[in-house]
Length: 217
Image 1 (cartoon, one colour):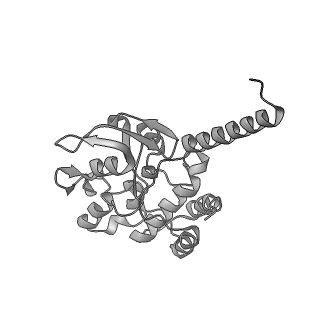
Image 2 (tube, rainbow, N blue to C red; image 1 turned 180 degrees about the horizontal axis):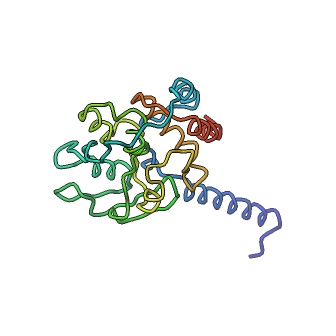
Image 3 (cartoon, rainbow, N blue to C red; image 1 turned 90 degrees about the vertical axis):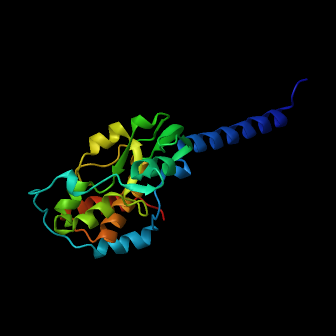
């Protein structure tokens, strides 16, 4: 059967719409890729304005052991395993709570992995950065709470590679390679520093403001 020109045009239009929809779904982060408690732009802007700007503190006395992690969150699940379950899709775990299957979309670089060992749990504000920003004066209990904070946007599952490339650098020295994640990343960082009463440097604040400006809401 030969299709008339209007019918052919309609079919092509429908196909194009479907393709755009599929592309949007494939290219978008899954709901599980976003950590909890991410405020809207207006609130984060107010938090950024309220943060105290100060010079970077010393690394004297720092060690990761002063931020005990990963502690037990519930049952046999520690913090790492809790975030892996939270940020993954169709995650199944064994009796020890370690994932046996699932997939993880890494918000920073847009990569999806299906092996838990290839995923790291990133401290958005790195432990060393927190130390330099005021945590050196905290009690060990408060540092432990910070290192295992699953209620805010301080922990997120990302690829091991992007986590390693970030290290303990602040946003003036490192930004996610996926530019469309700059908005979210600035929100995670600002809200975490605000919640925990940490300071920031002038260059760090400028970099955060630039990234926050990319947010539409």
